[in-house]
Every structure is written in structure tokens, then in C-alpha cells.
Image (tube, rainbow, N blue to C red; front, side):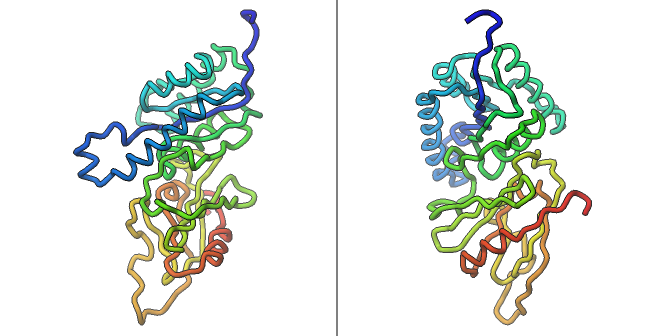
Length: 283
């Protein structure tokens, strides 16, 4: 290959904040009852390493945080030009941080002569957690690089922080038409459902657009990924009237929250989630 020749590359793998639980001490794991997530993380990490070893097409592996041995594994499997480990430091401003990461990304592409067109490249998201950093930074990369095609979230290549997802029966992705927002709907082991809204082309932690739904306060709850209920403010009790209410939350809050069916058939719950409407900020 001549000095001026470009290296082919039409794909990006974003690995975001991997191995968060691996860094914890045994005492920290016991204190917060995190053994489940340590085990899931080990399983997912093996998928990351296996996919890197078995990849046949050129791809740029872009790792944000986490252990260096994962970047080294990418160098060994893909070659050094195709392995980027971000070094940009967070200065307290998310927009400035995103701009710095994007600039570092473009420098790596230019310095390594990668024939990567962000307007047409395909990309996917790996890392931790499914309900936090992966969609948060995934949407930021899509907005700030910017990517012409939204990255694909690969749930099986992420580690989740929600106990309620353990042993789930399956999931489906419901795109909100005319937007970049996807509703991820899971069927849980007890037959109830849980849904989360994620932005694919916006930096979700600073996304002030609003998701609006009609929720039944007897049959549906909104909770954090740790399981704490945030809506309705008072639990429904026998004898209280059942109400269907307008409920809305900023997209920047959706990244932490589940909409859960408590006593609603799954097909009806799917209809509630699919009927969600996205409003621009300020509306």
C-alpha cells in the first residue's frame, strides 16, 4: 500500500464504558448485591472479544473508557489503524465534551487514512449500560460527528442495570414514526411489560424534547432503572377511582426510566407505547 492510499472502512463499532462492574471490589459487589450484573458483564465481554476475533470486514473500533486490554484486543484483531481509544477529558460541559470526542474521532480517521464517510457508514453500539451511557453517548456520536445513518443498538452486546430485565422473554423495537426515537418493549418473566424510549440521533442527556403518553394509573407505572416508582405519585389502592392521565417526560429523563405495565395485557400495553408522541422542546 502506498503512503497516500486509503484503508477501506465503512463500519464503526462504538464500545462505551465497558467493564464497570469488573472494576469493583468484592466488598462493593456484596454491599450493593451486584453479583447478577458481574455475571452478565462477563458473558457480554466474551461476546465483544469473540466478535472482534471473528470480524472479517474492516471496521473502526472506537472505545470510550474501560480497560485498555479491550483496545489491545481490537488492535490485534483489526489492526492499529482501526482501533481508537478516546483520550479527550471531560471538562464539566457535555456539549464541549461531545465536540472534543468528535474532533478526536475525525483526527484518528484522517491520521490513519481511513476511507470512512460518516454520511454513509453503518455503526452499532456496545457497552454499559443499556439504560444509560450506551444510548447517551451513542446518540451524542450520531449528532456530533454527525452520522448520516443512525447507529444500531445491539442489546445483546450491552450490559443492563435493571434487575427487572433479568430472564425477560423477549423484546421488540417500536420506532416512533417521523422521529429518531425508538421504544424498546420487553416482555418480562411474570408476563408484564417494560418499555424505554431512546434517541438514536440526538445526545439524549441534553435532549429537551418530550415524550407524551396516556397512562392508566391503576395498570401502568413509571419507575427508575433501579425500580423506584416515580409515577403515579401515590399508589393506586382498592376503592380509588381509576384514571387515564396525560403523562410526559423529557427525553433526557427517559434514559433512566421504564414505563411498566402492572396489570395490563401485553398487546394493550404495546398499543399504549406505540401511541407515544414526541414534541419538540418548549411545546
